[in-house]
Length: 322
Image 1 (cartoon, rainbow, N blue to C red):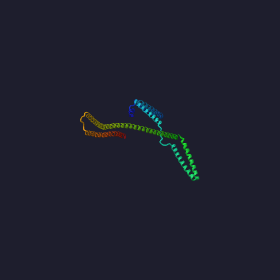
Image 2: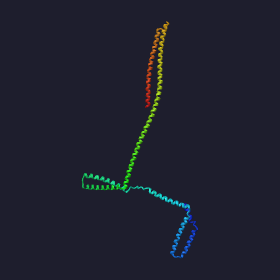
Image 3: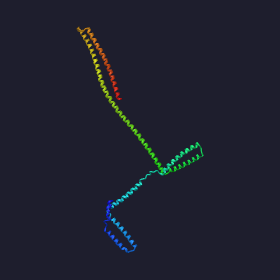
Image 4: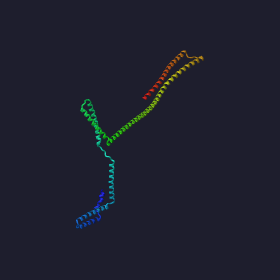
């Protein structure tokens, strides 16, 4: 706009020479017309003013530059566009009525009034049945007439377009809320089922991992227990075998002495005395008795150790499971 004012300032400053010649001609005509009648003078003045205004308009149109004309066209187009946009928005946007309508307020009042009259009629009927009075019957009749009138007014008002639309919107809203509630309940139930399935799957995974770990520990403990049992049982078996070997050696020694005695007897050689033989046999019998007792102890120890090892393995397995 400042550019427009700046560009238009030269209109009053740089007027063409014809404009000044026009003023001179106007003055000359005015000086000439002083000697003519007043009516003709007024006509001439009006004609000169009209010609002067026309010439000024032509001068303004001629003086406006091309950029100024483009700016004027653009400003006019903006005004047209804004006017079209305002009309379009006004046609599309519906003003909301925040205040309750008169018909809806009247309908609500009639509903409340009908309910109040119904309650009053019930109370009046109960009072009339308990204690009859002619005035009571007249009041009952008035209440009934008033109730019928209110019901008729309510039914007539319910037939109006606004009330029907209100009821329709309320019904649609209730149905929408009902569908929304059912959908939410369905989503909640589905979420619960999915959560239970997920928990069951997690429990199965945890149980599988626990069983795998128990099997690993059980196998490890079995190996440790077996190794310890084998070591201990090996020691017991070694003692048992040593005892048996000593018994066999004593038996071999006894047989060897008998064979030597027979050999010497056949050779008619000198042999040990009977006292020495009895002492030898007595000593071997004592050793044999002692070794047999020790052998029995080792066998019993072997049996008890085997049983205890099996029991220990089972007990360790149960401890791992727990």
